[in-house]
Length: 298
Image (cartoon, rainbow, N blue to C red; front, side, top):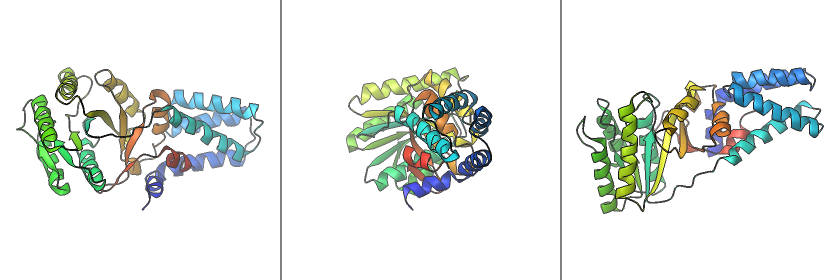
């Protein structure tokens, strides 16, 4: 199955909600102020958020007036063009090797599963991979990651539960350098901004990575659950106070109609979505394609 089709399938619920509402609105309405007000409500209902929805529609209204757009199809085309521009503003990431990819995020978003899928993805790209079980806080986190390591036939560096996460990362880097590993995938404990000790741990991990492997290309990816909608934005805000966020991995995109949150993320934070989860299988993770996403909206 091609990338375009996989993202299209994952966006099915979002597309059904978004497309149906827009088609209903534009099928029997004149291109007037009331229509634009109703369109704002539709965007909000699709989890694009109040602020982003209002600004998008104001931009649409202004451009439609300037370009003398008078048809429903013209409005739909112009809306896609505006949304596409937000993705152009976010710098796209090309992962360079050797790479340290540190995975951060709150509990329950699917970080460990995502790491397992990423291991499989990079190995399919003919890259050598090592997993680092840096979540020493949650019971059974290391054993869960070890199961993914066995499933994907990937090396793993882990310590006992309760060990110092920085020490595990140190050993992971030592191993990666000795084995000339292409990709080091670092798991971290799920945390909320209220857990200041765990947030401080992120800074410690970042310092160890910089000090011990300065020549590596380092990426911090935050994992967000697409089903949480606008709550994903507050998670980005909270984590960005403690760690540099380079990109986003969006999980459970196939199980929600809230995929519109991607638009709000790109518009408000200009952070690239790097990967998306498109199902529950080990192969169900894909590089995000802004073009495919916009084309599949409606």
